[in-house]
Image (tube, rainbow, N blue to C red; front, side, top):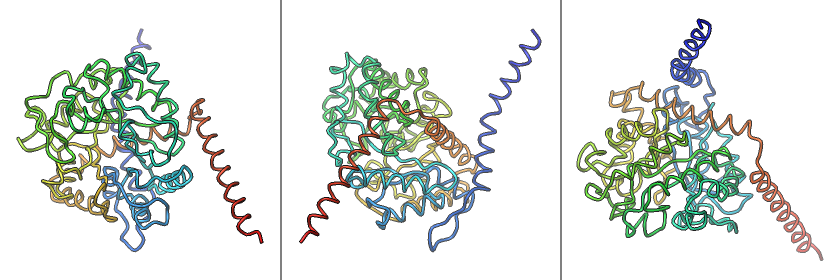
Length: 425
């Protein structure tokens, strides 16, 4: 009896100490790790590299020699940013995308690079430029095709699609949308068929299958848009939606259930105003301590909380880039996202890092808070890296990679034949 109790106490002590050990290891990594720097610029300090893990940006360019790619590569290599988001403008062909993502993944500063994409299906498919015949269904159409979102059927549907992302070296997909379709006339969710259903149980079942397929391929997912965009009457891309009257408690059910199923990697905060989740009547949940505290309580203390794009008008119309970044981290987000969807700035990552550094220096953000956020991001990256290293490709992943290789080989042969024909007298 004593020996069993002693082992139990030892295990409990290890579990209690693990978060502290992870944080200490993370800090040591950044103090002793590689310190590559942007060409022509100063080297990043240990604190700048920790802050960098809280920043994800979009960029211009499709190949490693493009100025936009070179700029973001330098920021990744120095540690001033920790991840990138791919948009349609970065994607042309399978070979091009593979070359680009492998290049970006190599620009690490001692930790893995998060390479993210919005690949929900339907009208939100960043891989559409590839012209792949394997389309991703709009969320709204999935229940009818999968027995009202039977988890096994949903997982089977998304298995090959998730393998496609993994084959392209993408390790984060900003989905599934777990917004409940309360307002079918919603301009950004309901009308675009981005919600699985008006029934939260169906939404949860669909999301569970989506996540399981991605996790099997070594890809993290992000539940969005907390606390729920499905009831809004306006689009946060163009205005700041107020959901005080339309929001319903059942919109939180997918978060609660998926947490119990241990399926939550990340939660994306929506730019939505509600007195329960907003610090002021004009502050979105994405920039509010109240909203982020609720999200963390529901999803789990170790889950990575990320903002929706801070260049959407709901935020950009009220805050500068620097102000938005500082307020987002101060409120408790672990990662700030700037897509550069319309405005491209090669120095964006440096600007955001400098703004957060300034806020740490003057006390608006504590270094302890940065350490905790960086540790959560580090834990996610570690899980993804460990999974990729130990991954035994499933049938879907293996077949898709073989298909990519065959396509590349065919294009190479075709190019060679065409070149020979042109060179012939």
